[in-house]
Image (cartoon, rainbow, N blue to C red):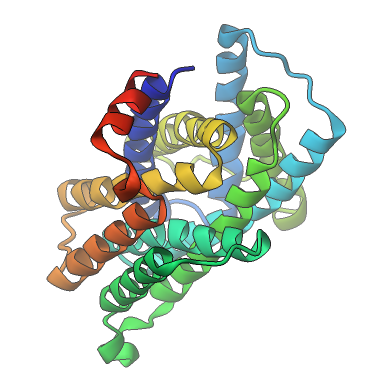
Length: 299
């Protein structure tokens, strides 16, 4: 796949992820977090069966791939519990900005620590931008008001995501679609056995609106969005792939405003802009000349 094609898919995938914040907020009115995790990833895995067959990819995967899928699935369960619960207690748009801008910054820090990379001045400046941006989003000067349940769950979600990104980036041999299929299947099965005690949760309470959002969350936001993301981590690495996260908060704000009538305050917008600049800097885009960007786009 060319860099141009993958870039277009990543833009669409990040917009899909932005929409999941609205769907999650709506679905928490019908089901609990673990039930939503089960149905989200069961349906997403079924969707991937169709995609894998159409793309003529193989369902075969080696033992290392299975191990990485299992560890990633554990991370997905934790992340999605914090994700769903956070949207229940907090604003979807706020969470979409805080979590998705903090995710790539934390991913960069974790990768730097694991690889024992010495940060240069540009990296430190970017991290400073990121820290200041997050503190502004949190309105740290009003800590007694800001740190409600929703914020705490959003912060836990952001802290969990680097686990998934870094682990999945070690998967190199085989299809990213196949890896996602097994990871989603393990996520659904693990949630059913461990947290739902093998009792399949009922979806009888879902009306047309609920079903629409569950299908959108599963097939568009997860089957499509996450598969493209892990495909990008395989081809580009976790650091570069996570750089596209800046598109998620923008789409999350738009969707939350349109469908939930949420108002995003000026502090969230300013802080979000600073964290986006931090992500841009951390991924080194400012060091790439215009000619190199054009060559990358055409490759």
